[in-house]
Length: 280
Image (cartoon, rainbow, N blue to C red; front, top):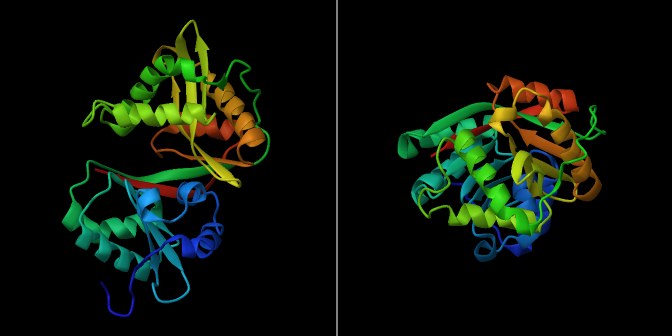
């Protein structure tokens, strides 16, 4: 740990200060803010630690250290301190993800100890929509019901494998991933167009606060791609999310996925920054 720049593990007494920092950018910080809004800062309940920098004064930067390592408002000094703690602790996360500049700085400091990564996605445009979609929504896209998990789950597995590059079955046979899908359905945050027991289009809201939410897992049946299904499908998800979850709807997408970026722009999403993901 760097002398004079200690890291402190936060607890519920620090919740107000942490929220004040996260509120500076509710779109970029939605993942961490949603976790804190749900369960607070107690590491046992959170299933992670939240590190603060500096640890002996006003909180200027955070780092969520759990299944993902996620920096928040971390400048070069904060990244050095967070990386030092992460090196000492050893890698426990499956990814480093967040604003590109911060993740890039962390990865530069951690790569020698933690590398090689399985994949590095160094430019993932962060997009947001606050107005009504510019295209008509698909009226057949709706919330998935708990009884439909066996219909939705194979599409989720296909999406995960295609996007992440590994199967969610690895390790535990998919038990944790299926539980996460079931949780999103129960929360009313899984949306799909289902025809004759077949998922045509799907997307989930993976993280949500009262201010913003983040769409993930967008997928169209490969046999039906190129027909504009994602345009009207995303418009439907956006409208339902804005009405019942949060007014700001966001997502991040790989820069090389030109068709997806074009579809999101057509719906009305605009780029407001860039994320980076380091996958292990």
